[in-house]
Amino acid sequence: MTLTQFLLSYSLLIIASFSLVTYFITRQFVLRKMKRTMMKAEHNYQQKIADLQMQLSGKVNMLEGMVEKLQLSNQELNRLNEIRSKFMSIVAHDLRQPLSSIQGFTSVLMMDHPQQEGDNTDQTALNNILKATDNMNKLMADLMDISMIESGRLKVDTQAFVFNALIDDVFALQQVNAQKKGVFLVKYDYPSEIVVEADRFRISQVINNLIGNALKFVPKEGMVEIRFYEYEKQLWVTVSDNGAGVAHAEKGKIFQKFHQSGNDQNAKKQGWGLGLSIAQEIVVAHGGEIGVESAGLGQGSKFWFRLPLKHAKSDTPKA
Image 1: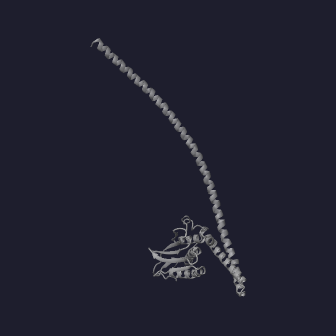
Image 2: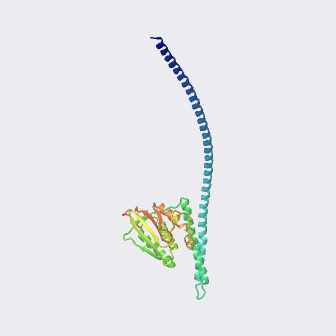
Image 3: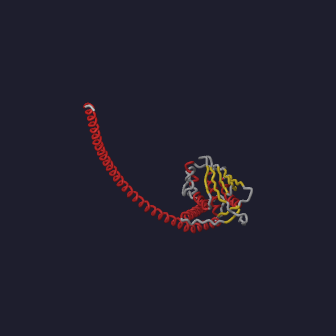
C-alpha cells in the first residue's frame, strides 16, 4: 500500500467516525427536545383535562340542583292537581242537589202559572231558568267525569249489547235537538246486527257528545250524518257535518281538556271544552281510538272512533 492510499483510507475513517459521532450527538439532542416537547404537551393536556373536569363537575352540580328543584316542583304540581281534582269532585257533587231542587221548583211554578195570551213573561223567565240549570247539570257531570279520569277512578262496565239499538236511541234523542236548530240529522243503518262488548252508557255518552258537538258548529239547514259499520273485527263510528270545519293547527289540540275552537264564538259559549276530552278517555279505556278529519275551515269535519269487537256469538246480547 502506498503512502497516498494509506492517507486516503485514514482520512475516510476519520470522516466516517466524525459523522457517526455527529449522528449520535444530534440524535440525543433531538430525542431530548422531543421528550421535553412531549412532556410539555402532556402537562398541558393534563391541565386541560383537569380544567374540563372542574367545569364538568360544576355543570353536574348545577344539573343536580335543577333536577332537585324540578322534583320539588313536580311534587307540588301533583299535590295541587290532587287538591284541584278533589275540589272539582266536591263542588260537582254538592251543587247537584240544589240544582235539582231549582229545576223541580221551576217545573212546579210553570205548571201553576200556565202561559196566557199576550203575557208570556213568566213562562219565558222560567224556561230560561230551566235551560240554565240544565247547562249547569251538564257541567257538573263533565266535572265529575274529569275528576274520575284524573284520579284513575273511571270504570267501564262492559257488557254485550246490540250497537244498532244504541244508535237508534241516541238518534231519537238528538233528532229533537237537531229539529230545534233546523239541522238535518241523518242516520245510515248498517244492514246486519253488530254486537259489541262495552259500557253502553259510556259509549252513548261519546256518541251524544260527537253529535252534540257537530250540531253546535253546523249552521241552520246544515247536515249531520251518522254512520257505523264493522271492518276488520272493529266497530267504526263516524259523525260528519258540513259546518265550520277544523283548522289544521287545532287538530292536535282539539281533544285537550278545556280547549275550545275559536272559529265560532256563539258555539264557544255553549260549552266548556270538556266533552271531547272525556270522549277520548272513554274510547281509550275501551281499547279504542278516536280522531278527527277536516280539510280546513269552512270545509266541515268528520269525527270518528273505533272499538275492538270481542263479542262471542254464543253470548246473548242486550238490546
